[in-house]
Image (cartoon, rainbow, N blue to C red; front, side, top):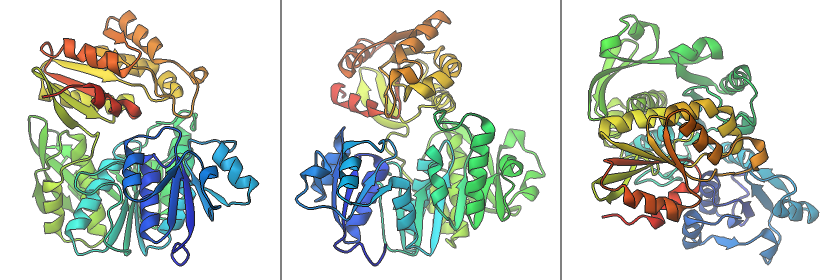
Length: 453
């Protein structure tokens, strides 16, 4: 595509998605004439308008036929934009296929896969690259503070998230593929653990080199594989540094922040003190360090990047305060992510309130007991399920989850809208120290209803 994007007319259907918006920006920077539509326009769409991208209600409203229609995987093939394109002879391409085509322009591709942590790791790698002399372009599934979701200085390296939904990451052919972890976050696509492991194994085999946790190496069983291990000093297995390529030793924790020593081949390279909260972010930073070493970035730049990276929007993002209660937004939507986030919250405050918007009915049903277990210890406000591509018949509703939490001895309340949730938060502003606002849907719009100081 490198030779054809100048003047090429591309319409993005579902352009408001974080990945689609990054691809739209990248296409525009390469000289394409970019337009887009979205059934649920929000803040991202408004930003795209400000960037000079033509936003319409549908592809039909364009004064011309595009050369290509790129559509989000959340759309079905009978969606109006897709049907119009097919009827008028406009080629169509799913998001992951277009991403793979874009990536072919770059000599070296770093693709970050995993159920949890993809966005943070991709953002940390991108930030380290921004401090180096390497020419790179990044496709980030979130807005990295100070970078956005599509930073670019050139076309030697391409850094991207690789999503396992519908096995879309198998379109990529990475120079270095990262497998952060392997859990089922998409029960509508995978029926058992072996299916998800098989998909990640295929991703690893599609990569020239793969980097994974030591504990996952046997499951992946890929040819050119590097391994990473992370331990706390109190639980140190002394042979770990010798039996894996990279090793992170957590040496200190205070108020939710961790320091760690980073080793390569048993040799200490640097000591890091990330600004990010949470032990899981030690693993994320260690993955980023190993990826950057593979790309030839020097140790000093890697350490500087890890120590100064400011984070990603909606990842433990502090919004402000109501009374004595701090408001923090986080993208956590899987029980394991929620557990890690709330474990960190308990280190930050004594009394924690949770506001949660479940993401898809099928996920809620598949991990129903886990959601109940992880939310039961907290006073929780549950909002209507963010349906995404589903209907209620696909699983269980937020109201059912709320009832189950209460039946198990927990304290939860179900509210129909953001305004009601904001009013409930206001009532509790001096009863709790911290409100964690959790979810991957449009719960970020709750900000519009909260009056902070």
